Image 1 (cartoon, rainbow, N blue to C red):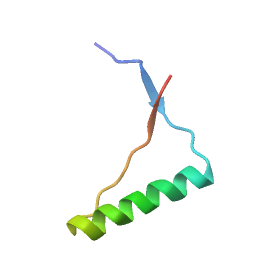
Image 2: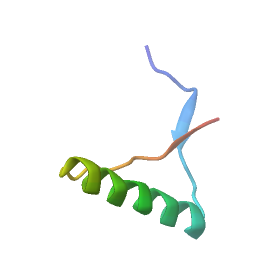
Image 3: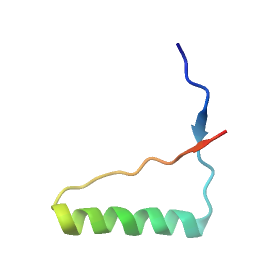
Length: 42
């Protein structure tokens, strides 16, 4: 069954910067490279 509740997020430059900041914080705290994938509710 397909879930159509979410779609790939359309993000602003400011939101992109916030995601990159969160990724950097995760790496700093864990030592691992995580990639944040942005989805948003339809």
